[in-house]
Length: 388
Image (cartoon, rainbow, N blue to C red; front, side, top):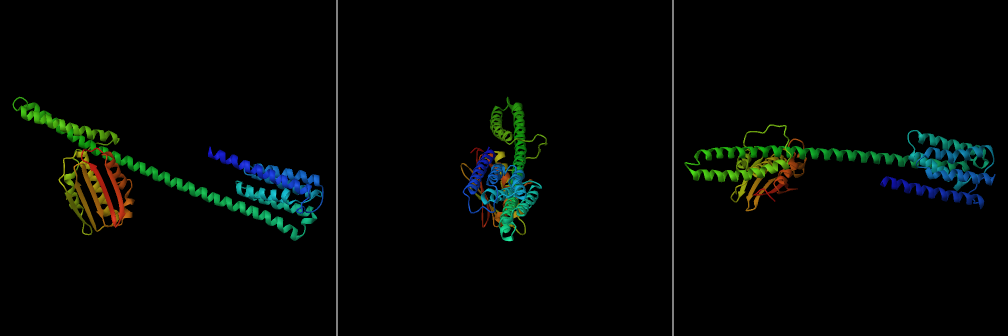
């Protein structure tokens, strides 16, 4: 709709321009102006003014036909009979049509248009004695040349701009597709891991129920405790199952039977992450409250991905992992002294970097921030109950 509106506005401007030039051309003949060169039939000149000016309304849509209408009648008439040469009613419409064919012409229209303009000017010079001297011919030739060069230059810049926009749009589209693919793959990975958590919870419930059924008569207190534990485990399993559904798990991969890591595995992860060139240490504040398996897995993966980024992309020499346990949740901070800007480049199809961390935190209703300065800082807050 915006394109149509722009086209309508251009036609309106061209129509105004055509009418103004026609009026100036008529006035140039009737008055006459000092811009009239040579002598001849003024009535014939008036007709040529209208023929060459009014088609300019369509100069952008049909540039080559408009150029033919603006030049050929003048050239033929001047060549065969006496007619005055006009500035506003003749040369200016020719120059505008020459500019238009160089600016809006497609394919071979531009070189054909330049040949037509040169031929028309040559015929007019042969037919009109006033244009046969070099001084009289130089000015119209210079005007037509300047019009063609200007139109051609603007068209080239326009093509470059359109090409640049198209390339930028393509890069943006590919980047958007890569980001969406990374999010989808990370959500699928999160969902598979949470599926394993739920599977282990259901397995534990089945074992507890079987044990309670065997001793319900001999040891009712044990059976009652087992039932309470089944209830708590089931409640946590329902929470995790809701996250599984929201993460849109892909069903074509087999779940793993190994238990997923959690908060208790973070000290071992940090200890194993140290190298001869990078020192990694863990700082813990507060007592860890009971957290769901899914929440513990999210905390583990955030620390794991942050350490991977620090080693692979930041070139860090020291990494500090801080865990602060609060009544409402836990705060995870991973700070390194490497090149902070480089960490962002880890967003890809394998680990997905920062995108993966955001998705894990979002699943559990938490918050995560990234900042760079003297190194890079990942700071995440996860609610202890798994809810915001």
